[in-house]
Length: 78
Image (tube, rainbow, N blue to C red; front, side, top):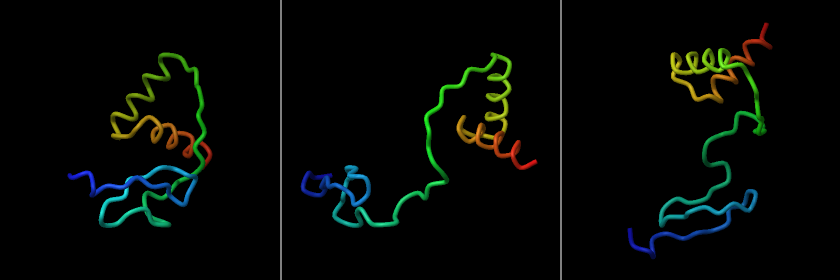
């Protein structure tokens, strides 16, 4: 793609840089919708629990975050 077809601009949200092509571009409300608040967490578990989580996520084809979210949500849904 030629250089003159791409611009880098600051979006209206959080001052993040975004790539703008000749069509489309940064639009209010576009993109993937958030599902909640992201917080970084360090978690220490036994090797057995990590293996259980890894087996669960592999079996259900989930990312580690999705697997942990499902486990936590199912616990609090009781």
